[in-house]
Length: 81
Image (tube, rainbow, N blue to C red; front, side, top):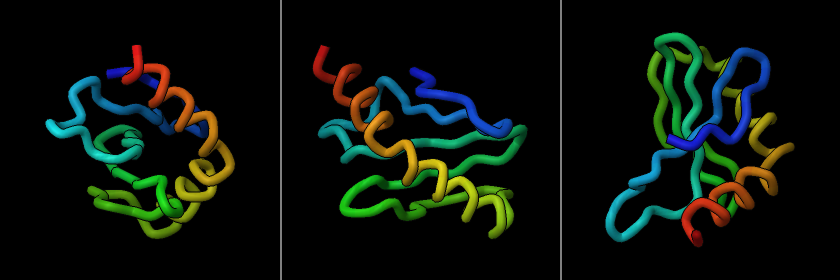
């Protein structure tokens, strides 16, 4: 489970086995017992969440949007190696 980065208590990561065929670029986010998944293309959007408040999800989406290139590069580096 490669962790891309931590920010504001959130852990942003993806799984090494992201389906067969592999799903498009996305990121999972965890904080304590809370979990969410966001797609990155064509724009950052929530796929699913568990226990995050609407305010937290808005904050997470902004973080992802600001660091979208970093997430995509980490995804490509991991899956193209």
